[in-house]
Length: 454
Image (cartoon, rainbow, N blue to C red; front, top):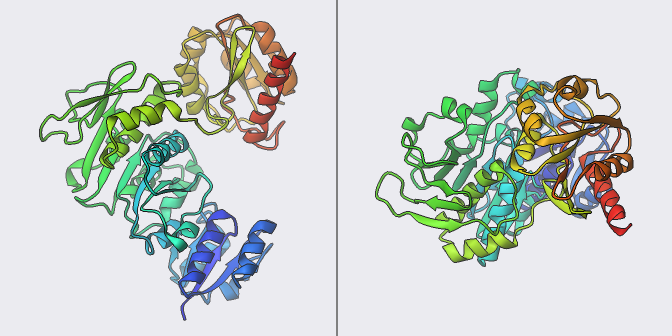
């Protein structure tokens, strides 16, 4: 009986272990850190051996195949030892793909993955499809494949999850954008990072669809469109004569969709005015999701109704409430400069901006024109705010510092006028003052709710 070793015992690893066990493999799970009790209970109930707080290299080297959790870097000692023995290393997604006949709609990109994944899932679910939600949104695809009761899966994939896929073939693949992020995992090479993202469609053939952002320069540079048999479905914010587009915005709230670009015109217009999503980047996310829904043969009225009822993930441009006519928006998940740019760009009203935290080597220069045009006050929320002050001190009319969410929200409310937007979009990690971005966002929500009650 073949032996599969699982490295990492969180959602992805435990799901892979359960699937491998269900398919008759001998399974051993190893985690260098502690394993959460919920996952220990799942492994014990399935009769799967596991270890925590260490890797027993001698046992791991007995594997016929290894499933690696996406968070484990290639350069770690255990991975190097496995590579030296030529033991195959795959991802949970690769394993799951072997055991399902369902159609997978897979979504990647540096920014916007979660929103697009949740929206695509919502469109299919509302249309009555038997659809599962999986991947980087926090649900194991492998564990769902054990019962495999869905006809479709919508799967969010990071570049780390794609790195160890070889035969996995989505029905529809979506690539939203490629901007610098996680470059330390790719030898600080933008090309290597871009090619990792493009793995999402490398196994697709003429029976599959590749939806991608024609406005993204990095995708244009590295996607060799001429050599691909997959059905290509580029989208853009504008009607572009240099592309045979599958979708573009003909007005602020109307998408033109052509499911057969370059063959004959079969354009239909889909109204997005009822969508609660904010900003240009969400217009791109919406186009990608709508294209996937139309390929799945969901009708225009069904799509328009479902767009109106969609609610995005928490901490992602999440409307929280109003205080004295000023709207408060929680974008705590904006932990990099690009994400903050999208948030600032998407809001047309004057902004009181709450930003700051643990700087990740940020270059704020791309934000300066937006901040100059739209931000009336900047509240720096961090232990060390010197880079923010240097970047924006001469740009914004008012700047001040605080080290608590309570003080930041209170001062923002005092500085905001009726019709303004108070935006928490930090552009930084959260670990100086908060446990994580969720804790930061939740504290923001609680302080706004407290002000509303008062």
